[in-house]
Amino acid sequence: KAGVTQTPRYLIKTRGQQVTLSCSPISGHRSVSWYQQTPGQGLQFLFEYFSETQRNKGNFPGRFSGRQFSNSRSEMNVSTLELGDSALYLCASSLDRGDSPYEQYFGPGTRLTVT
Amino acid sequence: AQSVTQLGSHVSVSEGALVLLRCNYSSSVPPYLFWYVQYPNQGLQLLLKYTTGATLVKGINGFEAEFKKSETSFHLTKPSAHMSDAAEYFCAVSGPYGQNFVFGPGTRLSVLP
Image (tube, rainbow over all chains, first blue to last red; front, top):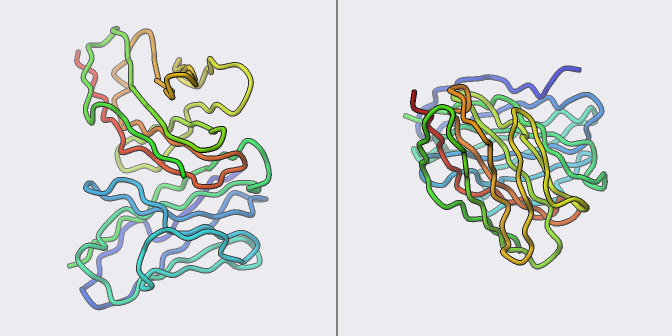
């Protein structure tokens, strides 16, 4: 079974631009979560989607948004990029939040650099 | 709400020595606890998890962890370190069914020859 895939793997953008990152979960997984990883802040939860609905949201500004499609693939968008948005963005999928135990399977991440 | 602390942002051990990575958690509900490993330029891989039942949990690559409720701890151990264990390790906590999934700050493990 294929793992979680994220595209692109690397991205360089300029301040003020916007960016869209994509995540394809493991087949059959319905929940997708996004995390931002930086050296200073560590792993921070962005949001979680389940059945095309945002089910949980972290403490990030509205410039960060996401969506999930009917095939469970998810995208996250960051508008008006700032230098501080430079980070590794990780996507994780799981079967179903109601399925105990809750295990998240992570993709390799997208490394975003804002210049 | 849940939170996680990991004592020591960087731990160095000699090859063949015991690995001990510390994790303490705070949770207002019975916690689910996880250890993940991250190799350079890769995502996170689940090492082991505790949900209910046996408090000593065995994971992949020879790692194990013990849930101690009285100490609110979930320390990760491995009897003999290998060079390939060099990576960053994250402890995480969630409530039952995955609500409020929170990662600790991570501990970078170096293995010296």
